[in-house]
Length: 436
Ligand code: GLY
Ligand code: MN
Ligand code: MN
Image (cartoon, rainbow, N blue to C red):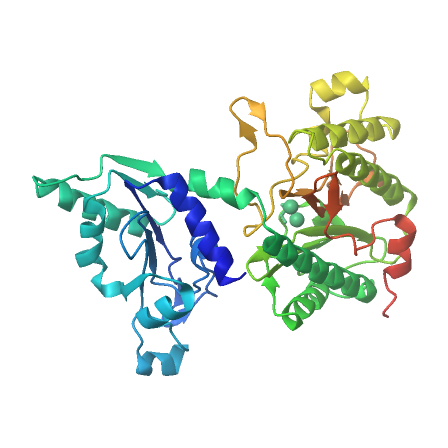
């Protein structure tokens, strides 16, 4: 993302906040794993969206209309000895020179400076609850102002949920964001194809996970979430991440993996037979899910509402399960009774962006939100039949199928960003084991 784009976002948010408001956003804290070892640092998405600043121990402050300095960044000071161990820091000078801050101060001075910045504002725009330690600090500054019994001016009268404004902005992707998401989807597609080629009976699930991670890393990416590589019974565990089972001839394999490219996620699922040939039962279930996904994607267009793809998937899945004898009854009554939830227990998709389950409301008031150009969502129907499923013949047990793609809503319809990964039965059979 360019410096211009970050500046544009800040301006857009400041317009919404107005001249009597102040917005305060903390960076993500660094998390200790043990002793002096930390978990990999991932910046807070809201903070990153507005600043592009990728360090912990920082706070961004926006004060629309403030003379000479509407955008203030508090950050760590330069420290040659720490930088020898941990790498370079921007420091306040770098925050101004390279990140567009009008003014910048050491984070250690924030208790002295920030209350004074809040003082003359009527409204504080802040997301409560995301960073509990920082919540206490903000409340401390506010209490300090109140207790001083302000006589010569204003103190804030109102706390407003900043996430409400910011998350609506994040829902509509810019050209630069779409380019990043297209790239993230492309890298995920390539990783899935490499995994398919390496797939065969007798190896561990984590060996295939390594194929994914290798492809992500060699493109400068990290996984956007823990990859799911679930074979046999594990294909039916929705958030399976152990990935430590030996794969057997005759297993299904469900792989849900996406990467993060420059802060933007992909989220892709493919399902395949471990030995490269779908059994009759696997093929039957797979075809229903594929048909459901295609029907759902057809409903992704600007004139549709959020739930239309889900409704379309539910219809095809219920109809298919009745045809196979896995559900009994009339399709409309089964849909009304949500009988399909025994096998398809999640929703058909979610917003996708900086977060894999991205921000943005799904409803406006009581109504489902309408889809608009620039939004990105996943479409990911599935059918899962765990071993031991009651009232289900044994031949179906252990078949879990999900097919997931990333879809951009365009002016005239949609674009499947992850279209590079094959999903037709013959294509998958041709790819699986091809590298062995
Ligand atoms: N990878 C999580 C999901 O598909 O929603
Ligand atoms: Mn998903
Ligand atoms: Mn997924």
